[in-house]
Image 1 (cartoon, rainbow, N blue to C red):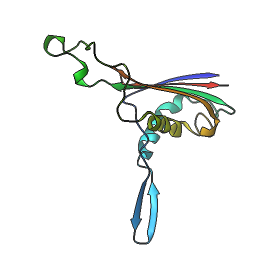
Image 2: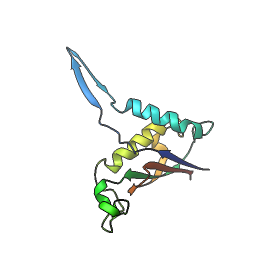
Image 3: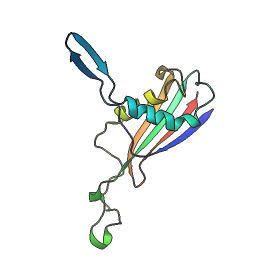
Image 4: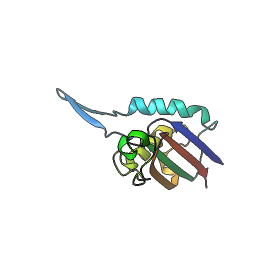
Length: 138
């Protein structure tokens, strides 16, 4: 089985869990919780009837918005400079983007992240920010 998804919008990264204290009570919370729930609601309509079982391969490409300095100026403001890079080498880190997607999709597309045995990810620039995901049973 192969499932392909395209989620429009700037790719998100998993934020680190935060710790807090209120008197003698100490706890943690996930600052990405609402964003993951929103992401999950978007991909829900593409989900299989029940979570996939067995070994899975996951391929993700995160397309980030290009900064203005990748483009020319004046009459060439719409033209990409020859020196503009293809790959995004700044924050967010690719592993945090992967974790955000995998946590959001868990229990919807698969039972647990441990089922993912093959993982391939890329971070690239694009004029159309989005996340492309391919899930394969193996």
